Length: 270
Ligand SMILES: [Zn+2]
Ligand SMILES: [Zn+2]
Image 1: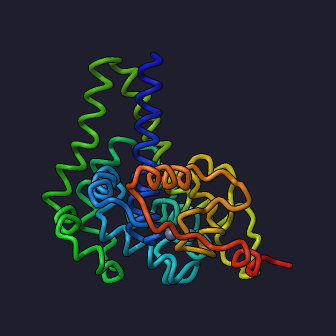
Image 2 (image 1 turned 30 degrees about the vertical axis):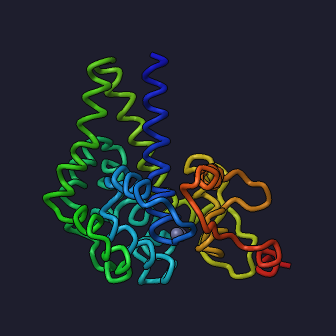
């Protein structure tokens, strides 16, 4: 059973890091330069979160129009469930959103079909990503669907072969945790927590979420300094930042962006 725990933990870390470092801090915000092969591997692993062009476009729209009517997912404007995951399936119905939140591998099946066909209204904000032929290819629905299905068939086949139904239940629970941790950055991190900044945006620093999401819970810091590769200031734990530093040591990441102490201080409340 230790092997199953190890596998599920590895799955959680891989899925989380691929979205955080690949999609979010890398592709969307260009907070550092990443080795192209590694970037493509991370993006391919992150694919269940959406096509690269769509993910980047939606997230840039979120930053441009944060907590206004034009924000694709604001819990302040559209309610908790719509911001959490309802915006992905065009539903504000808490019961449907809750089922979707608990769907685990079944969510992959819905998303494998849906993601390249929905939420495309902000792709014009990701023209730089669309210049990459590989990322364009990943967004084609008949390419996207089989790759996302492989993301679910291979790990579930593996755990079933070794641990049967216990393995299925453990990996299902892991998937529920992965999806909801990520979705919580769009919902909880715009509702619960603190902001130390003069510029009172809806984004909040949330310690628990920061632990669950490899640093993404320092969301007030992120909205204040979106191009920063480091989100945990004042020695707050930001696991992704340490991974990016490690990648820099290996020669796989460069040009890491972060604000100076003076820049941070100038934005703080008195
Ligand atoms: Zn946000
Ligand atoms: Zn962002």
